[in-house]
Length: 222
Ligand code: PGA
Image (cartoon, rainbow, N blue to C red; front, side):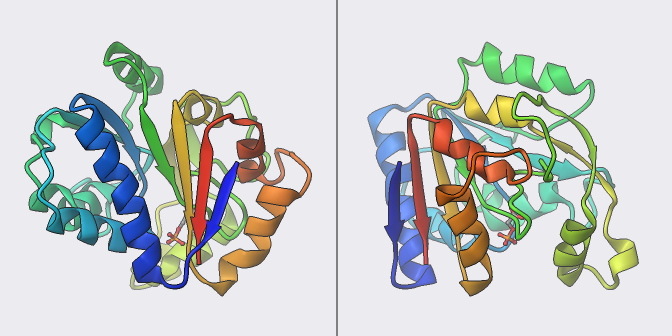
């Protein structure tokens, strides 16, 4: 596993943008898995500035809250505002988990699987909305959010009561089928969990620790 510490959030964002750019130049037909949250905002801003051809790229988001997709805090809205409305991607090529959840996986596989999956890490070690205790074999499914995740994400809502309690997430087993995975982490509050995930025991109590068992993972943090 390649692990690299960057000097700033800006450098973290541009380093991962360079990797995405390389992928898109190397192979125009790409399937990318994309995250939401605070961490990738700089990456998306950086990608939007670059003159890349997204016409043949298909994106699959890691997770969605179960809520109105037109809500200002839905992940569909987040992706439109931060990336999709700023690049030349076809809206029909931007996919979000849906029910029946396994049909989402069929769609990914129909297009040939995932070339690059970009992940963030939650303060409890989650990847996508696979909370601690999730099976490493889990597939795309409906989940209840952890209390810690609801608290962490309440900063985006007027009150903690407004945070959706359920979501659809790609499973850990699904994520692990990606040909390449990049994990991004930003800020001092992620240092301890990152250390556990990368150097601690591989355990379902720390979902991100599963990445130690994938053969093509790169970790970038600052
Ligand atoms: P953050 O979330 O980027 O907002 O810290 C990461 C995550 O929960 O996966």
